[in-house]
Length: 263
Image 1 (cartoon, rainbow, N blue to C red):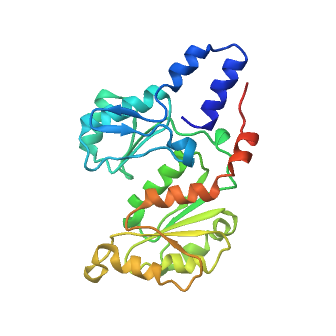
Image 2 (image 1 turned 30 degrees about the vertical axis):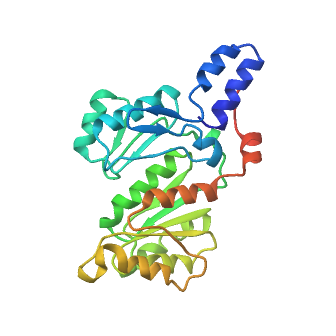
Image 3 (image 1 turned 120 degrees about the vertical axis):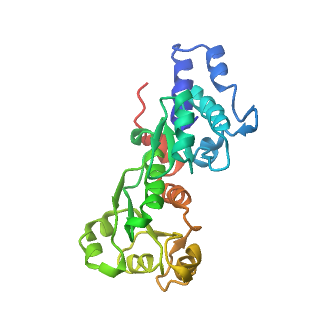
């Protein structure tokens, strides 16, 4: 559950559209719900602004289905990362309303609405090469499901820097930028020297021998001469999107006051 759904629930009780017993039944799974193999943190969105997201790579389709079913019963965002096509098909056979994002290897349902999650502006996502797109897509899907407007531009690496300059409007209008790059990881440093908004760098495991599965890009970004560059772990588009969403989200008081909730 999130602030908007809790707010609507309480207003419903106040206005007589819902009984106290009905509200208690809705809230009974807060703060956590224990199911087989998992303890689900339904309270996390209220504490942090970001709901619990499922890391699916090492989970079975049965475990993911059970977790998804609980989130969908709550009517809240369900998001699972690192889901291959075979596992996604097995889960969607049981829960067909889930949407599979093949490039991002993610499952989602009930994305947060922008009207319920007031933001400061747009999250921009850039990636250096076509091979980096899966990580960039993980960031895009995550940011959008968290209620952010997102603009993405792919294949704009330093080997053809003119491609980046064609998107200079994005560099100057985004409230935060996520920059994804493998190989030597140079693109975030370039972007960091061209814009005033926060920049989050994501190294990918793309590259030849001495890229060391992304370690070279990671170290290059950590040693960037562009001041203030934030760096997440290798291939961690999800983590970058969560950080960008926290930057882009208005503070709690503003969010509740400005949210477009019909009562």
